[in-house]
Image 1 (tube, rainbow, N blue to C red):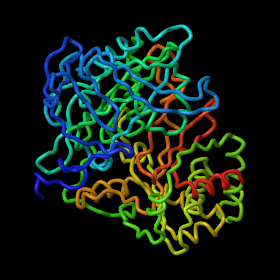
Image 2 (image 1 turned 180 degrees about the vertical axis):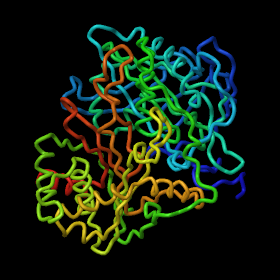
Image 3 (image 1 turned 180 degrees about the horizontal axis):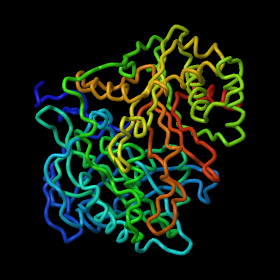
Image 4 (image 1 turned 90 degrees about the vertical axis):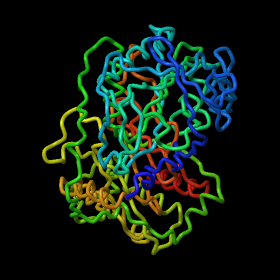
Length: 513
């Protein structure tokens, strides 16, 4: 393999997708020292030498005093003002926050489970405390970031390509890109953030919009936006190759612990070579997650012809109970046995989405979802392993079979896909990537990712737990997200995007539960 032309997202010239938005332009950075907390980032393309980042009409910051206007109109029945134009003032040029003390240098190994998910994930955390205003938020969070980077030092480095043509991290201690901003409104006036809304929520995270490929995007960027109500939002832009949901949760929670002057409850385990591929590689399982399925039903054209609607469907405890009863009906294998919430929800969404898209009866459809392999590896991964410990499992069947048979049939398929994930299967997946460098195909596929068991809602920087947290957008049209919600986190919000006509059908099926 030519290391100068590695495949897929690893190609330095490849286009990078950031949650449905293509990031264009080239990173043309030069850096100069700026105090102890970090360095000012500048671009050669900026005429006056100050930071100038432009893209999608979002950010132009040419000096410290000019306002950065990020305008969008949102509507929400619960808002005091039905129309809010969100404007954000970037207070200072973007800075680089470096580790507080010296950290290891050199190349940092990323496993094949990391290589497979090199996509950007943008999330926000909304904080509002009655006892404490937002005056100290930037100082506290920024200082704690420099402290936590001592433990999570690869995040202060930069992605590069190894001689073998794989992603690796050059531990340069360059630092995490950090931005301070202010909004022109109260936090509850920005609209409904329980569903993905890149037009509005995207203004609360900092994208390096001049980056043309994945190598030009730092592993992590952070933006703290203060609101007039005394609340603030922490927006994070993170590369999935650095950690999965559990790893990201432990990183953010560790960051919060240091902000409160506490020791880390879960120090990170950094050695990812424990998931190195075999030599020679040994593929022992059928990996249909990589299979390309023909779009006989021409689903892609439907997304092109109609606007895509993003909605959030709340499954409260009562609705989940009803769904589980339906999921175990008409099944000898499930008769008298309960199924998990994940099994019932996944089966329902897969089946309902397939019906909503009106797939042809003989159209193959694939379900993909991630399984946490930490405890399934032999031996289990060490506590605090902050790399990707997840593996994708799958089920494939014909659309007609899925929609015509009872819900219990789909539940059985989900259950079998979970059982498929063993140490042998996961190590085979690692070796499969070593040989093929393939990425999972999303054609005629539903990819479910679940955050319902992740403790992002427990993050505390000294202002209490976030009043709300979640993604800015969904990565692709095939992705559906499960989020815990409500009192005691017992409800599940299902977030998905569908063409308008299909969304109407999905909503009807939801109401029939």
